[in-house]
Structures are given as structure tokens and as C-alpha cells.
Length: 83
Image (cartoon, rainbow, N blue to C red; front, side):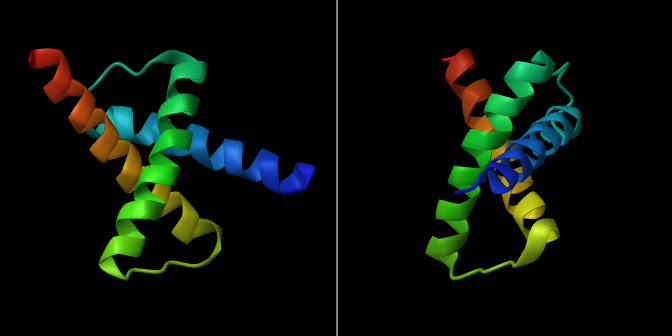
């Protein structure tokens, strides 16, 4: 992974984490927290989509995948917090 791809990956993670926190009616975790949620969500979304046989290409597909993964991650974190 070259530097441009890494920066794009982190930017997509930051956007996905921020959008997911707003969609899930949260207050967000700040820049760093949203970035972490988005990056972990990107991996989680990629894994879930591969299990379902879904393949989205391009930057928009990566953003959708990361966003879905981040939403699932926030949902799981809220479930764990309630327990």
C-alpha cells in the first residue's frame, strides 16, 4: 500500500466513522475516535460483504462498505455497553 492509498483509506475511514456516528444518533468520538471506528468498520464491512458475496468497487463502494461496517460496529458497541 503506497502513501496515497493509505491517506485515501484513512480519509474514507474518517468520513465513514463520522457519518455512522450521526446515523446512529451518537455524538461521535472526535476525529481520532471516528477514524478508528471507520477504519475498523471498513475491515468489518469488507468481511461481512465478502460473506454475503457482495462486491462494491471504487471509492464510493469503499465508503459504503466502511459505513455499513462502522454502523454494525457502533451497534455492537452499544449492545456491549448495555450489558
